[in-house]
Image 1 (cartoon, helix red, strand yellow):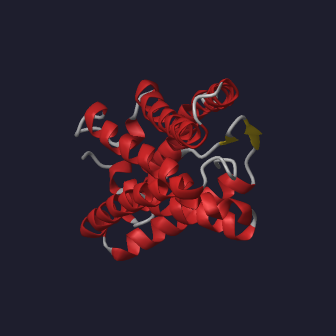
Image 2 (cartoon, rainbow, N blue to C red):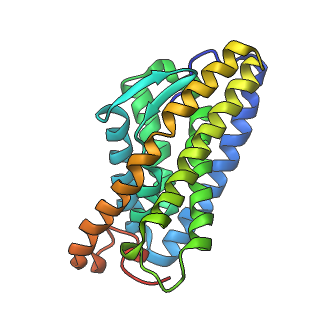
Image 3 (tube, helix red, strand yellow):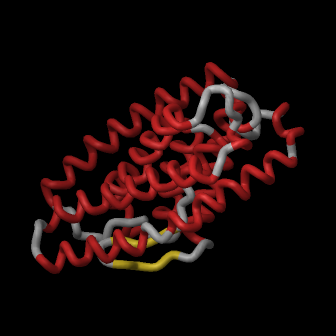
Length: 225
């Protein structure tokens, strides 16, 4: 997911610095929560795995330009369910940065825009999970409807932020709005796939309950909150 270069430019870029700083600060808070619960090694391990997965999502999984941005299978809700919000935030931020440094340097000027677009929906998923998943439910026991709600929240959040940046940067002209709508329609197709990916990954984790005794995955994967 990358905003097209030049879509937001000049003094308007200042807003992206502020939003990214806020997203980073909240991500730090979530990371501290993970350290308190599971320790520094667990945060580092989960963050590293999340980073590798995000980099893989961007570079190896299908992606194609549509309208004002690109459609990627980021699987943000999957990262949240497996590793927790703090490590997932680290993975999204560092994976995006690595992808820009090594393969898409032309995207680096838009890094703060793109990282905001990836992180804020993740935080929305974290908040939603507390509302729709009962404290006595381990993530491996999620239902399809719950996975669908989390996926829709993440992908919908990404689309909303992309639309915001596009309209903020280029205004409400007919061509720009058409590009935004085209991107949004294409991107929401990911919602069809991501809940199934969530449940498939969780089913795999359920079959490997020995991982519950390691720092590899979030404790909530196997244990009630």
